[in-house]
Amino acid sequence: MNSIAKKILLLSLITVLALPISCSRGRGERPQPVEFTREHSCNVCGMIIVDFPGSKAQVHYKNNRYDTFCSTLDLFLFYHQPDRPANIKAIYVNDMGKADMEHPKGHWIDAETAFYVYGGDIMGPMGEALVPFSDIKAAEEYVKKHGGRIARFDEVKPEMLKPH
Image 1 (cartoon, rainbow, N blue to C red):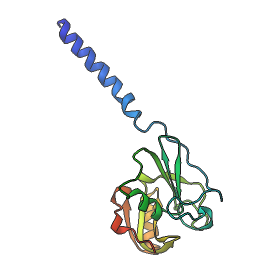
Image 2 (image 1 turned 180 degrees about the vertical axis):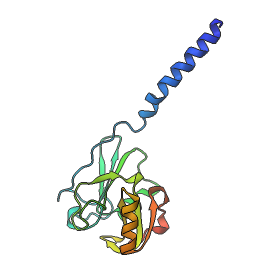
Image 3 (image 1 turned 90 degrees about the vertical axis):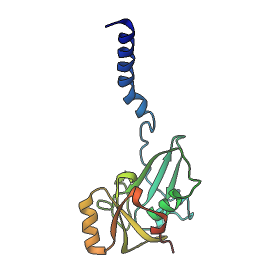
Image 4 (image 1 turned 60 degrees about the horizontal axis):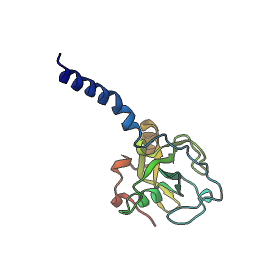
């Protein structure tokens, strides 16, 4: 093997080994979700978050700031705005297969991997609820009891959002 071929092989090997490191820097380590108190108000409507039932949401940014939402409906209304921040690092929602529907606390899951039930008979504080679950089976059971359909995060479109 000549020296040019060795250099190309070495550069290729370095590139392949460095790729996972450079890709993991995109979002970096995920921040921990915040537990809401009476000090937290909704970024969209201004309501005190803990005063209302249903799943809550939070968006964390690369600059270590975060926004809070009294409902997943408000999260999606915010997320679908053309001027939403581009530096999102993590989005969390309560897993309603595990959290108490009236006073959800904890059970935070990655919003982008959740299953959302919409169009059922449960209303949220700001309109029709999008009820998140970490498990498809729990979402299917919820649909059997309350009606609705299941969608993934990237399938939720503005026309599906029904505030009152």
